[in-house]
Image 1 (tube, rainbow, N blue to C red):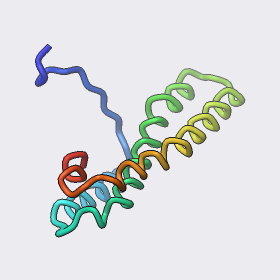
Image 2 (image 1 turned 120 degrees about the vertical axis):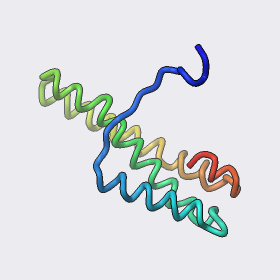
Image 3 (image 1 turned 180 degrees about the vertical axis):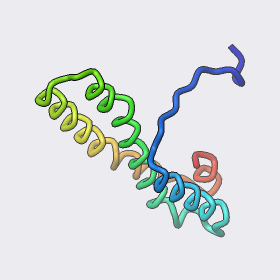
Length: 105
């Protein structure tokens, strides 16, 4: 399969977050020193990760009619996962240089 035809996934997220994301990316691309925005990029990536987990895992559980207790367990598990992965994401992004930040954004 060619790179231009690779399978992909997407998720829908709130319009307000979309606007904030686009504004942030514009700020990052225009910045003289994008590394000054690394913390904000880390926060944005963590927020998108959290919303993606909700979209791909928690919402389908609700749509499947899974019971309240099981959904709450899943909610706690996903929240815990984000609490664990969030600092890792932020630390990695904080160590990137100018061109690396622009590449991943």
